[in-house]
Image (tube, rainbow, N blue to C red; front, top):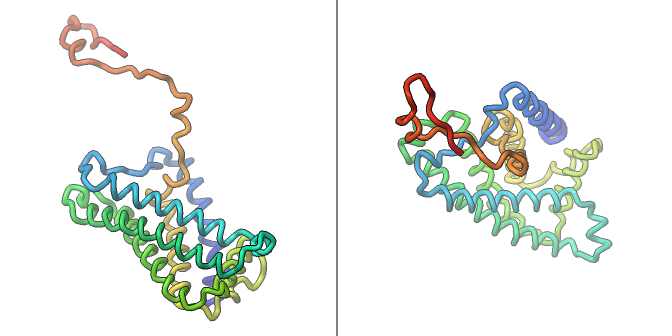
Length: 239
């Protein structure tokens, strides 16, 4: 079961995330959105959203660089393993605290505001709960990490992640004896990959680039034109 969860399941999760997202974008492009609740109530959204999104982006960047950069490159640059581990703890702790604070604000807003709670789908509630839970596990993993600041455990996760990315056999062997909280963190991360195509998480891979070349004007109907228009003639249009 260990080898299936940490050696096979990552490929299943990534495949479902990529293929499912492509199918959704092709079949239901109008559902590809963040479903913002700002129109229902703006209070708490700006602060919570900024803290959450900035923190999560920093965490993702740190995970990608920290896990997928070959350790030989750090050795060539003269970066000690312990220094890299300490940097990950400090930077990850700050970014994680930001993201968790923002996530808790958004969580309280979604479940505490009657209007937002009434318009939230099961997927909306599931996503925020999973993300907050993942942030708690990530911050919680700092405590066992502090007991081995020599970077030895960090090397295991780098070997596992690079083994999965480069299709190296036996990648799951690197995680056999690590602390349970790391395993739970990875497992919940895979669960988030599974839910990605079916929830609002898809907006993470979208960017409003079309706004750069869209027309600079919009056709609108005015109330004044509608009142003054003669019988049989539609409302006037203005820009």
